Length: 170
Image 1 (cartoon, rainbow, N blue to C red):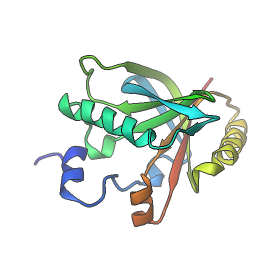
Image 2: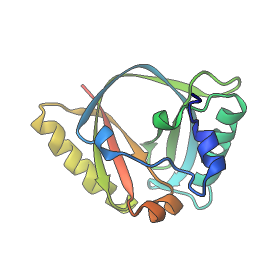
Image 3: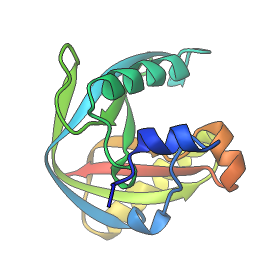
Image 4: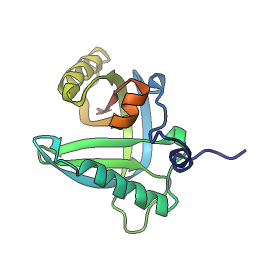
C-alpha cells in the first residue's frame, strides 16, 4: 500500500491544505526530540507580514523540500510560524531529513497545543486564552508557535480558519 504524500495530494486535488483534525491538537501535550524543520524568515511590520511575501516564502520552502524529497506524509504536515521580533517572522516547515543548503532548526522539549477557529487578528486573544489554559495546568509558556491549518482558499472550502497555538512549556 502506497503512503499518500502531501505532494501527491496537492497534485491530485483542488485543495492544497490537508483536511485538519482539531482533535489531534486541541488540549494536547507533544514531546519532541530533535524534530527537524526547514527555516525561513518573513519581513513583517508590527507582526503583520509584508504584502505578497508570505506566500512567496512558503512556496520557496515547499519547493526546496519537494526537490530534496523531504516532504512528510499528509498526516505529518506541520508548518509553524514564530515572531521573534515585530519586524521579522520565522516559518518552520517540518521535513523528513536535512536539505542541502537549507537553514534548519531542531525543536526539543514539551509543547502544549490548543486549537482556535477565527481570524488572524484574534491571535492576541488566543494567546491570552492559551496562557489561562497553561496557568490552569500549572505551566508557563517559554515560547509560542502558531500552526495555521489552512491557507485562505482552503479555509473557505472547509468553512474553518483553524489556528493552533503551540507553547513550549517550562
